[in-house]
Image (cartoon, rainbow, N blue to C red):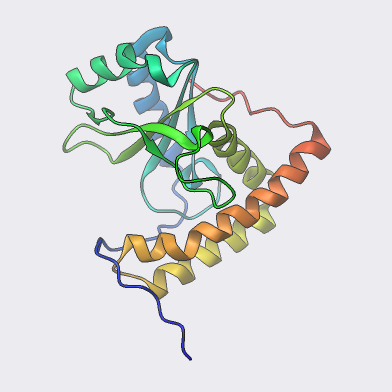
Length: 202
């Protein structure tokens, strides 16, 4: 019996770029703009995901995490962002982590995109102390400390992109379990060093 990848409807191509020193600069520009728009509605605005890890190749998309005190009280944050062109952010969605149910409160978030035609960015609005909020920061900080792990992770992503070059869903289908494996190592590292998130937020 042979195993084959499932067929995916989302056929957007997957391109992994070598690390770009411009990524942190791009984050700062977007984050500072968001901070001016929403003020104190955000507790912190962080650069997360692979583009936040120096030297790590990634899709050329800036991932931004906005941390809020209460996800049920975010209209004062999302409304002014939508007013200047940022898109989506009207319905709760859930991150995927196999140890939790699909609608676990620890995975709930709001998701927004950049204004039409601007530099591509994924904006994740998550609640302080929830699993997904902590996970994004821990994953970033752990990869920043271990060049060996980040290099192997990049190799895995490039091979996943080779196997599923024309489907982002197929790529994520391969990549998600690796994220969860890295998390287990990161969680042990966090306990060992008494980790707290890096203070490089807007």
